[in-house]
Amino acid sequence: MTQFKALVLNEISNEVVCQRQSLTIDNLSEGEVLIRVAYSSLNYKDMLAFQKNGGIIRKYPLIPGIDLSGTVISSCAERFKVGQEVLVTGFNLGITHSGGLSEVARVPAEWIVPLPERMSLRDAMVIGTAGFTAALSVLALEKGGMSALEAPKILVTGASGGVGSIAVKLLSSLGYSNITGLIRKPYQEEWVRSLGASQVVYTNTLEMSSKALEKQEYHFVLDTVGGQLLNYLIPRLYYGATMTLCGNAGGLKFETTVLPFILRAVKLIGIDSVQYPIMERSAIWEKFTQNWQEVTEIPINEIKLNDVVKTIEQLKQGNHLGRTIVKIQD
Ligand SMILES: NC(=O)c1ccc[n+]([C@@H]2O[C@H](COP(=O)([O-])OP(=O)(O)OC[C@H]3O[C@@H](n4cnc5c(N)ncnc54)[C@H](OP(=O)(O)O)[C@@H]3O)[C@@H](O)[C@H]2O)c1
Image 1 (cartoon, rainbow, N blue to C red):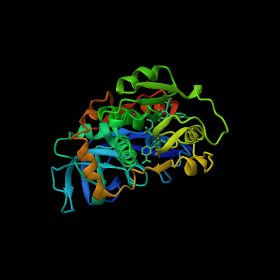
Image 2: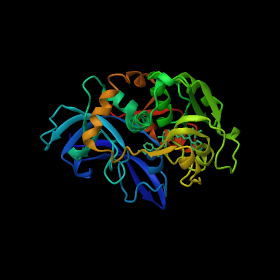
Image 3: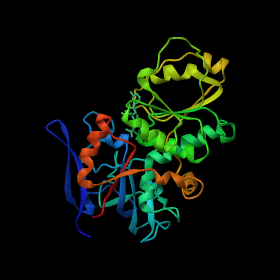
Image 4: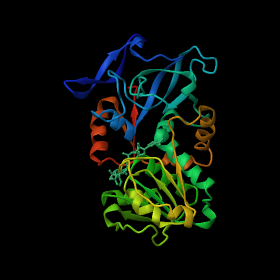
């Protein structure tokens, strides 16, 4: 293969511009493994990468795409053989290193996860960074004591988004029955309920207060929104509650007091999927082929490279639902 197609982000006249270009392998970042990309997926971070001052990409031109699944074309790493199916999420893919929105990618071996035996390349991207992050969050909540047997009251924020929707689906498939999805728009309600939420709450109905402790409402919270929303949620956590934080779609800063921590023993756990140790990733991906299989049944938008810019705009405008995967090969 001499030439292949990829999306390329460039800074032109002070704007970030995305073009579909014909490239050669020399245009790719360095790495031991060359991969024919089958699918990529679109995440909040991809949306930021397409924006000027998105805070994600510092050097142009760059092929975006923080996720990919595909087949090894050539490899200088013993662990990976020609023809092997693999997936990559996180690290610097699509950030400082040429990413997955390309027919071919070249990636360092230490970023690559062998595709689990009973997983398709498509399903790997249905899950993608969003699903992997939802999984890390659910595992952290279970480590904090969450058990379906006790039917705890769980809140998932940003429940209409990629991480949030997979989290709701994963929790309901694990038998959790008391799941509330926090959403912003009426058209999202049916979708979030169909994934397994028994209640939805609209952000515009939340009554903010400045009290350090409020009536206890949630045993576990899986937050993807961050920012000022936490001012509302932390005082409402039950005694001994655990809350995971993975996102900042709603902002960076929040205010709290020590009281929920010292009087109610609540725990806040940070989730990071990007630098998560490579040696521990396969075990999590394997779970999606075992007791977490239902997650891949989530309804998905599937698009081609040509449609990426339009979908990125929907993510930016906040009128995108759930997950979008990108089929790379025609
Ligand atoms: N820590 C990690 O490793 C990791 C990994 C993946 C993602 N993340 C982060 O997790 C977050 C979600 O990612 P994603 O890919 O799921 O994004 P997404 O698909 O764009 O979903 C974002 C969700 O947040 C909601 N939202 C945005 N602003 C909000 C606000 N001010 N108040 C309440 N809800 C708001 C959106 O609602 P609308 O649809 O109504 O706009 C949507 O449900 C992002 O901040 C992302 O950076 C972190």
